[in-house]
Image (cartoon, rainbow, N blue to C red):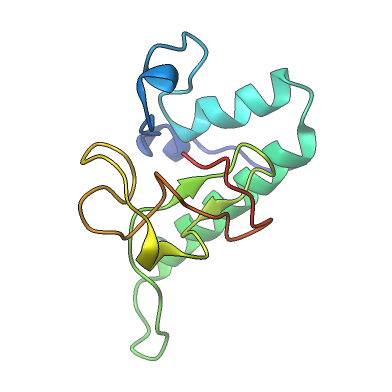
Length: 123
């Protein structure tokens, strides 16, 4: 089992387009995304999502060590595998100003490829 902390609700999930924006089941935050994976019968995706978020929370708790060189940008959620993180092609990503990567090419959104499975089903 994986711990789903209350802090997961602090990470907003930004819809890519009107289809996602108008979907009543679209999760507003990562806590709801993990729940959605569970309700959809995708426990491995829920576990992968939770592990990624817990890892990130650990990095935030520990703070910088002055040695690590971490990538920066807006993370994306992969609906195909549950991975949460920067896309493989973060520098190439486009999107709207609201979508991850919008305006700066630093995250998910249009054209993003999952950093886990390489798929294109990113938010």
